[in-house]
Length: 507
Ligand code: KIV
Ligand code: ZN
Image 1: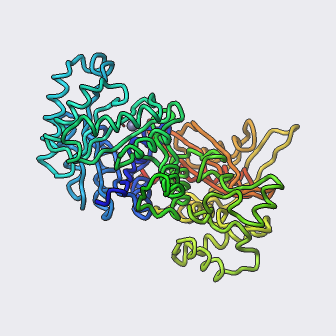
Image 2: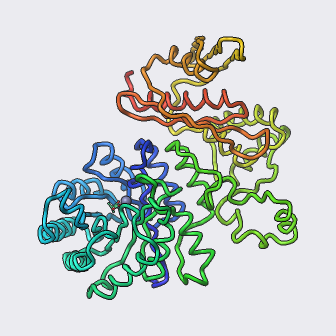
Image 3: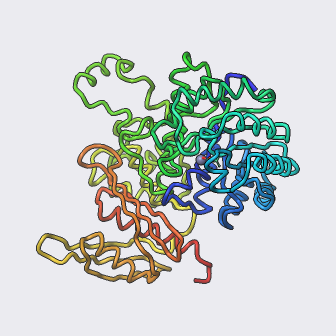
């Protein structure tokens, strides 16, 4: 491998999914994995197969679907974990088993009550067992950043001798700072005699907001693989963000002297997909993928930008996949114009799908003079599902005000029938959700609701994410509209439809 190439290991589907509230269905995982393949990541960590049947199935199906990237499954240094990971990866074109064990004193004492020698033994056994299934083995000494250095060198050397091809150094609790983490990587190269026989990887958490800085410091000191997630999602404060590290390496190529194979134009689309699936909205000022990341507000800045964009822009919005934000469509653009613009954005819709999107587009274009790419993408997200929707919105009527009881009437189309119900509620959205509950009659609990503007300006479309639970399972729905109540209704229905889809087909 070219010494200057940095391997991008994406763990959105494993560590990212460990974000509170971010659980993903198997279909969601496949959709994200396909997009990660388009983004051209090198490795997709698809899940932790032993942890549940759904995790096993997620890894198995991603391994079957994805061809270009390596697909990886996580396993503790325990026989059953490793066997299960190997089984889930059976159909992978390029399988990798990632096995880990904690090595810091606090973890060894409190979690395992085991000595260094016992942990070392487990690591060697785990790597050897994984190696009996495939060649590509990653080993992580969990909590490396708080592990005694001498023991870390010993266990890394032993894991490589046992067959590990990648050694991952995690800052599991986000404790390190850039200088010392960079030094740690440097020291590992200096003190582990066989380190050059394996790839050195880093995996940083963001508890102190330093995950990206620590990862870049590691790269400066020779780390060849970075473990990252889209939008930086992950346990607690999250993981190192893919988009930030990749764009730092690209924008400051002359400084780092390194590159990745990421197709950076796919970044925004991937970010939006992950946000939609998990219901975790991206903060507006988030680097690279926040809606304000390329917005120039101050008059002086705008003036300079008109003279030369590079005055205030260190990378172009197009380079990370922000579409042209000028007006793309209007009421008179026509079906053909819409089809061709959607194709430019990468959507090849069937006739039925295009009909549905076109109907919604006309509706939005009536209310909003300027229809942006982000609006079109939201409409596609609403109308094009990878499963048949059991319920579709036919119409809604809301009565609300400060002196009336908020009341909603909702009509849904279900199996060629229109079913209508009305309800009062604490507010118009609550009333609408209660009316839907009367029609669908499936006990759910609403546990999260977020509303975000998709674009700027007073005519912006609102995007709503809701999370509902049913029998311990979570379903995230999203909906978009110029009317926030309609967006809420669509999001709630989307979540209900996902729940319905996950049930046995006879229901
Ligand atoms: O943060 C961590 O230590 C991990 C390991 C499993 C690599 O996620
Ligand atoms: Zn982690």
